[in-house]
Image 1 (cartoon, rainbow, N blue to C red):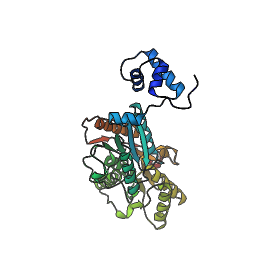
Image 2 (cartoon, helix red, strand yellow):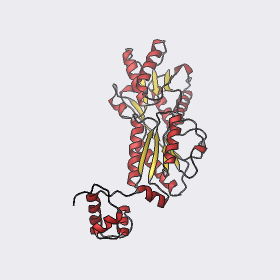
Image 3 (tube, rainbow, N blue to C red):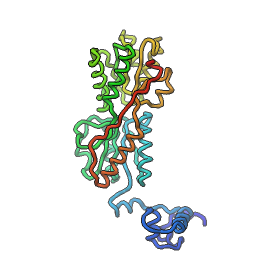
Length: 337
């Protein structure tokens, strides 16, 4: 049978398949009793005639749209793209479509996307935004929201899935100390999310535990919101030119760490001979860098799965724990050996 140029109705699907409208509905929603032969017959009619279920109308009847909103800070970042991909797959397995919004770490754009997603009547929102402030009135109480990886201030009652960022900062810095480093620079952003701030606390605590000072002069801050690879390279080059002395670098993520590696190479500084470098995320950049980059491994697949499970529970009205913490581990490579 040739596919029709005009989508057919559920009634017409039922007539062509020789079943009731109720049976077609059960097959489409995979709910209720029907034979495998009936399933194949209905699905064949649907495929041949291009039937598309009216999800909007279905959503109105069920008070659900079967859509999830997701706000991420930087789709070009390997960690966030992996997290988004895994979350989309997990929701798809549960019959949900996902609307992904990239706010580029811009607070106003993040607010705009939040309003847009709510206006589209999404069933829930996964928020990986880098916003450091949050107004509770922005999200109606009937729209479940879960933060993954980061969370803003004044959002203590919103469930979240995070990494052991403080512990990650501690073990990264302690590893550099164990490798003989005494003046360890911390490369971070000026408008860092809570997760990155926690890494900085871990960095400071490791130094203190070993009797070393967290010298403010060794804090190298990047101004930009995205594409920090080039900025990291240029900023560290400026610090080297100004005479800054350091023998180790802990970078807030692998993108910045790789930019640092290039700046060190440009300046003729050997890694790990003269300076040792540790990144964060254990992204694809860490293994393809030269030298290969020691990094704190996080687990975006686990974080995505736990965030999805948490949001689906909220959608179904099931209470959840406010915080779920995913462990991290250090992966040692050439940049510190």
